Length: 336
Ligand SMILES: C[S@@+](CC[C@H](N)C(=O)[O-])C[C@H]1O[C@@H](n2cnc3c(N)ncnc32)[C@H](O)[C@@H]1O
Picture 1: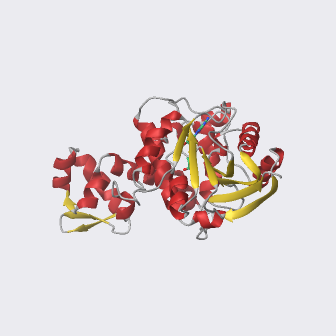
Picture 2: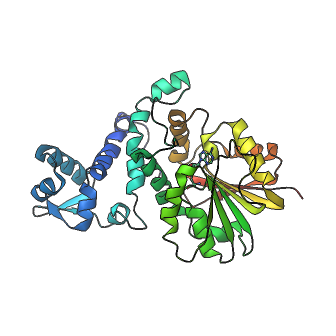
């Protein structure tokens, strides 16, 4: 991470208003402005007509985006920075629009943060995991997909995955990891295990991996005794422990370990809290405070301790998933 400026009134003020920048980006995606500008530069008048926006509202948003450096002006036309365009072009493999929309959905929850800290309870809101279609749920699963696509490539080799192994992607959601691993290791068998509501998003993503076969098993890892059709040689638990408290995490890890063959490997990917460390990992715990009953982000020591309590041996922190990124990897083994 780049070094931070020393604390000063200016830095405190900038921190207190940092959400303005985020909200400007959210609005630019929510109104369709960014998607429109990924197609071609356009004038305010053209954008107003096409997107049915208020001229004053659009003009003020465009000025803010110019100042943020996301846009520039060529004559009367607004041009999206070509380095930002790949993240904002809907339907492309590098698109982050759903991750942005998911963040925008959570602004109302974060606005209740002080209340959540006082009461230790999540914000009063809709639960993204409840069954039934809703836009927030769509944004959530597609955001998981957008983020996983940035991380999954090349990871199969680091995990040492081999043809003939059966991998459990526990809480695998849209299945990007299981699908990418199977693409990179022909002959690997993989099963995504998740709530029934995740299946449409898994099917949607699986269509992008022609010739790759991954099974989806609908279930609830807190309730079900078994995790699909094991036994498995490898279990991959990516970004699921943080939604639960330590006791539930140990129970989930024990269940995953029980689904492994003796000597099978269990991998955890989480936003691991370290101080000093990546700000996103540090702040992610607050996201769990406002969104879940018991969740939080964990330190590497806490994760290793939970693996030990679940009966896994050789537990170790392996390092960041991506150099300088917020996610880290922990692994352990089911004893022989
Ligand atoms: C933060 S997402 C992580 C998705 C994916 N593993 C990844 O890293 O991109 C958490 C996932 O856990 C799933 N999940 C939450 N509670 C679950 C439960 N009780 N049983 C099965 N899956 C669950 C969600 O549906 C979601 O797909």
